[in-house]
Length: 260
Image 1 (cartoon, rainbow, N blue to C red):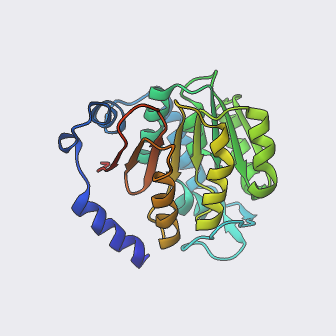
Image 2: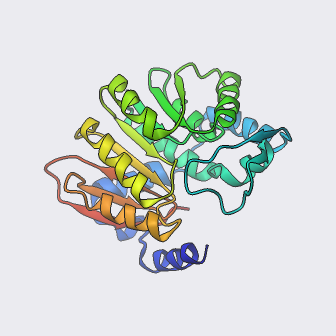
């Protein structure tokens, strides 16, 4: 946590707001999408489910395949505790919703379903957009499926299992990846490996989103390496998550940006 706090101070010093950005595309992206305060009708429904999860005292077994949690110890946890400490804040999930609404992908790959709240935002943009979401822990995947049923999201396919075993199969089924959201293993080696495995399925209009890019020295190292990949032509570092674009022919740019 000390590393993350120091990284946040560095980010505050160097990050720019919309008026400090000279790229027209990035300016539009920030002002019209990521910091827009417009609410969509699906927001209230999803946040109602979040509130229900925060009151859910069922205790489930959690099998952790990643770097673990700083605030949740042991393999027996209440759904409420997971919802409190593991789910993305509404502001971040809604920023991703607006980004997906801007990109309008045919398919989305998500590594790390958790309880399904962020997945619900991704899937609610358009019914024709299909979301493949991978979750390692069986009990958490089961709760996420309950969330999707409550929200009538029939365009989500949950794949339960270790990413190492399931990712290639899912990629072959998808054929291409329009958007990838990587939020399932906060360690350097797996993050690099999963990005490299996904990379052949990306195209010029693909977008990759990495969560918790300054969570640890390992994650920051992974973000710095991936964002400098030769295929990446634009990277946006919002501290809590990073966004990568791959459009050929544009000037390569990297930005640290403030997200309200």
